[in-house]
Amino acid sequence: MRTLLHPVFLVCVLLFVGNQVLELAGFYFPLLFSYLDDLLAMPIVLTIILAAERSYFQNDKFVLPLAWLVMAVVAFSIFFELLLPPISSKHTADWVDVLAYTLGALVFQFTINKPLSRTSHRC
Image (cartoon, rainbow, N blue to C red; front, side, top):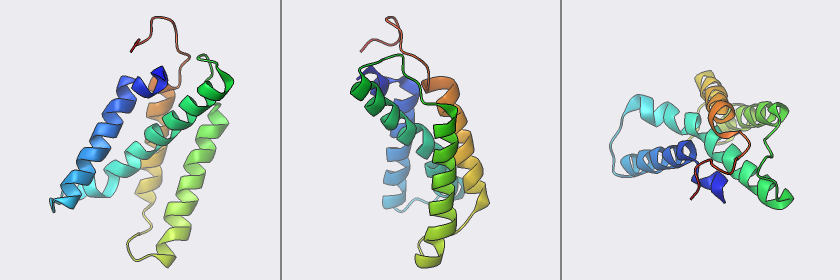
């Protein structure tokens, strides 16, 4: 699964885990706590989807269509910014999160969502 070994994906996962560890340890950095997970969500989720699609279709050249990225941003925005906040006091609606989802999707599109070649990061 070379897709899951993409350096940008691995950095996103490490940043996400590191942020969670800091939160659990009681360290509070407002910008990291508020927006880093939202920024990393799209590259992580979309890379897992891309890896599943490539595995299922056995096609390393497969890339996610732009419409899928848009739908992922819309779905996350609706669920986490419209539906979840009224029913959970742990979540607040913040439209900056939508910008973070969008930026994360752009990071995915321009770095990870490329056909794999024979020479691309063999691992």
